Image (cartoon, rainbow, N blue to C red; front, side, top):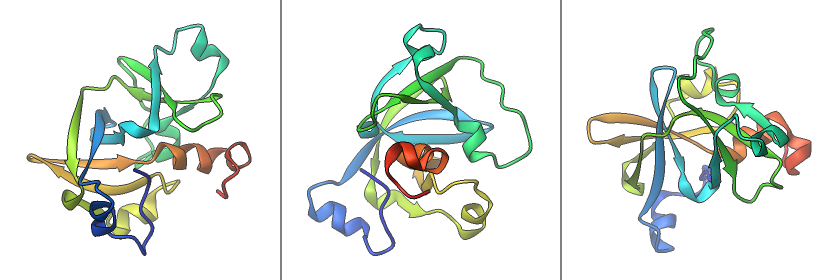
Length: 153
């Protein structure tokens, strides 16, 4: 499921038969993040030879909330579905895949949205007792390389 525009609602997705997304969860600079698995074509170790042939974007460069340097303990590169196969996004080792009900997803608070370098974080979901920020991988790529994706950045 892609980022919903302001005119779309949770009910639009539910009317189309989509009641939840499956999200790959990982930690990012002390925050829990999630990516819709439908946006992921695969995952590589950044030391793999195939990863060396990609333009790999570091998630921390695109979504920095603070002026901290990110330290990856067990980094992975996510390959983006529907991309031309040339781009990957560096994240910390994923921890789980969970079902996220559309009814649990809320818009990003305006103060957080205004402080982002890109529009890649599109919502917040409460999963159990945890707040999870939802990331759109297509927006990560588009905000960095609009000419490579054919999207406006």
